[in-house]
Image (cartoon, rainbow, N blue to C red):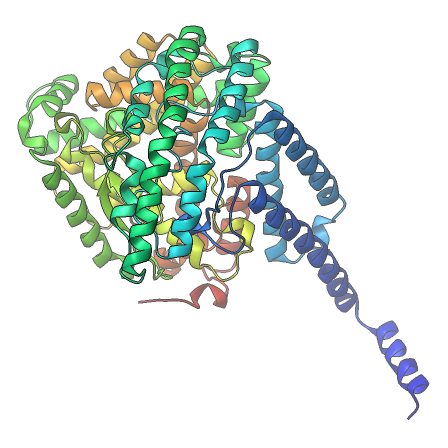
Amino acid sequence: MTITSVRTIVLALLLCAPAALVAQTKTNTADERLKALYNAEWDWRQKEEARVPGEFGRHAADDHLPRVDAVTQQKRLDYWQKTLAELDKIPLEQLSSQEKINAQVFRAVIDEEVVDVRYKTYEAPFNADTFFWTGFTPREGFSSAEEYRRYLGRLRDVPRYFDEQIVNMRAGLKRGFTVPKVSVTGRDKTIEPYLKADETNPLYLPMTRMPSSIPQAEQEKMRTEARSLIAALVPAYSKLLDFIRNEYLVKARTTLAAEKLPDGKAYYQAMIKKFTTLDLTAEQIHQIGLSEVARIKGEMQTTMQKTGFKGTLPEFMTFLRTDPQFYAKTPHELLADATYVLKKMDGKLKDTIGFLPRYRHGVIPVPDSLAPIYTGGRGGLENCMFNTYNLPARPLYTLPALALHECTPGHSFQAALALEQPEQPGFRKEQYFSGYGEGWGLYTEWLGGHIGIYETPYEEFGQLTYEIWRAVRLVVDTGIHHYGWSRDQALAYMKDNVPLSEHEITTEVDRYIAWPGQAVAYKLGQMQILRHRRQAEQALGPKFDQRKFHDAILALGAVPLPVLAERMAKFIADGGENPPTQSDGVSP
């Protein structure tokens, strides 16, 4: 048979091909265009963020810090806007199901980047508990000599990095776009530990934890270089401290509401959309919060009665705030109690989640330099942190809920899953959406009561404490940034409704003031996940399996909440079953 004959036959087959084959060809074309676009953007973004291509987590940091100057920010905005224009040209209906999800996530990611640069949020580059001057401080050692060399390279770049941040903050001061003064006050103290030109400087910590795989002579050489670099950095930190204390604090705005900022109403709505991925107004969120607070208060009343307490709910809240039995006496006791909860949860995982990651996190205290103004805990890939500062402000009855949310099966667990999901493109492996991620974290607190984690009515009340706390956030965040509440109004509303310590309440309110919109994501995300669970249980009846339900959520990775809604509708339509690929991992 001649080549011409073969070509004729192939052409005839193609002409006779069913519509599905033609559609598949178009889909593949759209898929490839999308992959080329998001892979190119991810490669570019890693360089912009000073990351080593192909690395993830703390291992990804390169030998320098990212550029943050206004010119670079504008170039990034131009790039992202062109990327969105290219994304618009790819027909969503021609994408495969997985790539459709990737396209929706990619668009949300780039939209977030565009919003931040468009509103110049880089001109206010810190908030009440997260600071650019501590963000690159390691909490442990590195795994190789190359990572240590890159770390030393980052230290050399600190003066340039700080100078660019100061220029940006001065530009923010000039146009009235700053962190509110109340949220800056006292935060200057977090710079003080870095003024030490010796081994007590927090930057030296990883040099004390070098692995034995690095030859001793090389270890000592790098330690010597680190000591020299840290001493040389003291002037840069002194300059920053002087700027924050004597210029930024003096000129920072005294107003609280995000809507009082330049183009404030649009800015606050953009932050709500960024953090929740939902099209809700401040008024709608405020009303949802008021309704949830009323509902949860009723449950708290019932749980209080189970403890045998004789008195009113406010009296019970005072009792919980003041009785020594509810507070750890040492940092070790608090960390040990948290670890006990997490090991108990490990024993429940096989009945709770199907796909289990190999990666395991540690439990560590919040660093001393951050602890006074830090939240109660925070989960991450490497470690889950608990705040052991001011122990009389850290109730043990809320600790189980906190451990579930921040560690396992909450944020640390999520981070490990995201790292090990084989199906995810690079740009999604460390992507985070607050509505999804914090919604899941708050859902795991509710789940703790469903699977037997809470051992006493006090711990059950602790879970409700944390739930009403997140519901109150809906009211307080919108109250401050939309309705113009004062700080005292916000503090009073929280104290009246949330049985946390005054220290925790004050820290939280200052965080909401400095970080508009972020706090509303938790409760809205949790409410959506619980709604999906109720729908699945009702539709599937005895076929409902919570392991498969949780796998359906977690296998997605971080996604906007509308994407989660689409996936859970498909889960129910498929009879509560997941695609086979979701079980290709470590399963019980």
